[in-house]
Image 1 (spheres, helix red, strand yellow):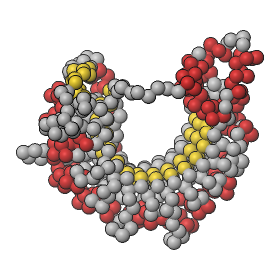
Image 2 (spheres, one colour; image 1 turned 45 degrees about the vertical axis):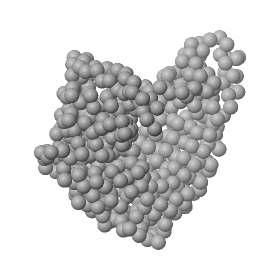
Image 3 (cartoon, rainbow, N blue to C red; image 1 turned 135 degrees about the vertical axis):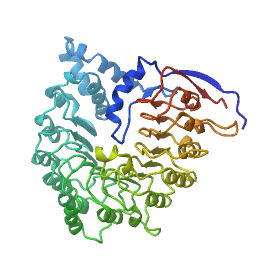
Image 4 (cartoon, rainbow, N blue to C red; image 1 turned 135 degrees about the horizontal axis):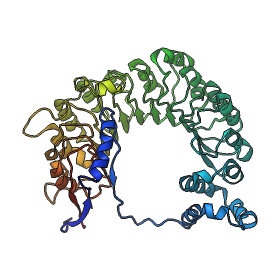
Length: 480
């Protein structure tokens, strides 16, 4: 199919004294951290028309403060609120929480917003307190999806007392509720046999206390345990004893162990326990030799793998990636650092991904059909070797431009010329698919504009801490 001439549009990136200054303020805070999100965004055309219920909800949320003082509230508006069907309440609550959180006191939430199949209560919402949380079982015992995140003052027994009355739960999110522990897990294991998703990030759940959940809830598909600091190889040995070495849970698809202190043997056991794993996040852990974890006969069909800030060597990395052709998302930031510590992330000598490793990895990844997102943030050794074509340029032209999201932040040797591969070589080559491109804290300058402009789907662009001054990017769209 032939393509017509390009239609060009303009995207203003900002000025030397304006946007660049504001972005640079965040640069120093990001230099030693293997992640980066500061970005400029633009809205792409969409043909989606909001539903009538969505438009009505937005109008109500925008005028909520005024309506509360309306004399008609007591006899008319409040009755209309009670008449809203249960399935619409969660969406309305989300809109109100975003537009006027300070007007949502305990009484209003309990009276009108605890209904519906799902509920989100967060500790930073001013009107939410322990009584609000404990009222859930009284007003909505059949709830299926519950998020109670960021509650630092509610004790373990408080969550346990609530969950014992919620037997229909399928999704339970307790992220950041730091006192959640063994009592809560035991209550969920005995009361909620249909659980599918459990988020225990940044709680106090120990490996031993998790055993009842694993053994009694066989249908769990998503399990998140990131940032639980008491997960070490020593404490994990009790988990192995509790569940037994013969147990298998093939239904689990997503496992997050980010920022735990587990290493090779413990993670190996989990891969055997969960043979159906598709999304695996072991960033900021102590894993060193992932190749010993997998064999061609038992390898899971991983679609997402995150090894950011792990002490994995380049050869081991190349070997394990070659066994995962179904990958869609790959996180390889700051490889070589120990558990993601700021000291090692900022230490160039600690990094283990080199130009030769990236070239080998590129040869493998360019054959991967489904790859959509790659994170190489903080690999400070990349781009240091002078070749006819740098490893970064080689990677971007063969792999990066085909992805939807590419994070190259914190690679100081990345130059504008390395981005040339974003542009199609001729009309027989498809335009780049990139929707998100993060280039914070790299060596690019205004020359990069002409290459970035060749990405017609680009919606988010990070330029903090670069040499970009005042440029206008012309981005192009193909007309079929």
